[in-house]
Length: 400
Image 1 (cartoon, rainbow, N blue to C red):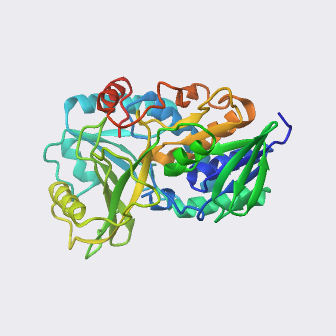
Image 2: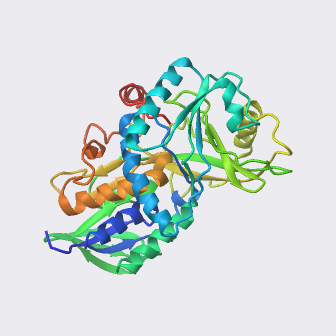
């Protein structure tokens, strides 16, 4: 490999830009190509939560790496709102898992503690504890603006010589000795390595290279909740979902007098076409969301639904991202896709691992993350995969 290879990163969302920045910081020449504009895809429609309240050691390991990057960027001007993250437990077994999570997080350097049912109102005075056993709370967790994050990273990338070509759709690929000639709307780009970080468009990009990539575009909706008068406290992120159990309702403070709410759970059986999906929140979804909110926070002052929107979670069959090689015989094509609803918070570590694969042939800076590689047993279709998903959840509970 060249001492300073030219790497083309496809996609200017959080995964693509984090991959590009990690590559450039290691000395690679980097060109990001984006069919639309920075953060125009799933990243710009995310609610931007960053949390560590998971019950699986591997999930926490990934966030050790991710939070290291976030802390560094925050020290250099990235806005990060530390409002805290509360995950609710409905059963004694979930509380047992949460107790284990506290221990794992403590070992990882994260602050976290358990709250029993009667203490939940100390965190969220308007919360109804009906049907709950308690929860786990991380005071240092919070949210950021994904659009701001993408532009922050883009500026850092440009400052060290990286290039971002917007409105530059990838049209075709020709292989050449030791690399690729990428045919784009703005001419041909010769490169040594390609990172496919195109989110919900990643399968279409993979197809241009003759590969099959099974990333499922799962549609999710979010709504602004207006409050009049504003709350006298800052609402932390509240999530009602543990390892697939719960309603999936989550909500958090956004700004004075406003919350953002969504349902982090879906039952779609077919992937959405990222070029032709309804990007507005449907009325039926607003009604369902309102019903769940009335159950969990029944007395919010003057609560009313505001604007809504929809975005795509690019998910894999086992709900772990793909980071690595689809085809080991083609080490010059690295995939970084399929992070689902955790794309923003995992982007820093996914970018770190993708850069390792591109430049070193393995995730040297994050040992143990080889399991994220899109191997044949993982890179499988979502269609008719219910039994496989159930088995995957049993083997690897995601704490989603």
